[in-house]
Image (tube, rainbow, N blue to C red):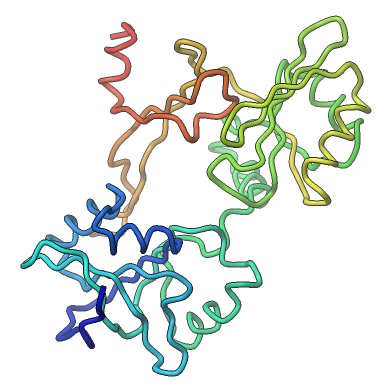
Length: 284
């Protein structure tokens, strides 16, 4: 695909969507992910300048970005040079990795506003903030920092199943569920392309497995919560929250996420509208 020079004139704000290189390749091949199609369609109403780019598209010498955008007149995905965006929407892994140092410098240099967290959530910080709020802490699952097998014993003495997860991360990466099966046997489940199930007989064995799995990363141990199960898959509810034109938070929709069969997480499964799902399984 040729690059058609510098795009202009530009509507403000300029929104840059930072994606993985393989997603740019799919756009160039006219095989976009449906989410990026939806973003482009929504932009017909928002009327911003919207483009997609990856790490290799940042041109330090020109101080511009080779962006991929949808040409509504020709109905094709094209590329052009754009200025750095006013707003950045991250659709990749966390930007705290060494390979993103130069990009982070450019973000600071140009005063780019992030639409979402550049480094992902620190789950322990979020937990501490919520737990200190008396209006919501009753609903927050108990969590502690993992140090050794005594922490596992403390949590498993109180709860039938617990979750171990990195303090930073998302999309279900590195999440492990531990369940008491009785007779001193514990089952661990994790998901990475497929569900991995392991059974152990001692807390010391579990603690060692956690150390091996997380390789020195700081992790938390969290109380498991009772979830709906449908055909050997767990389901949970996700409320989408955003600010309205007056700056007030609103719930704009609730979806049901249904995990893959036997998976300990709902991520990487399927999503359904709230009413559709519960009618489907016969609860409405």
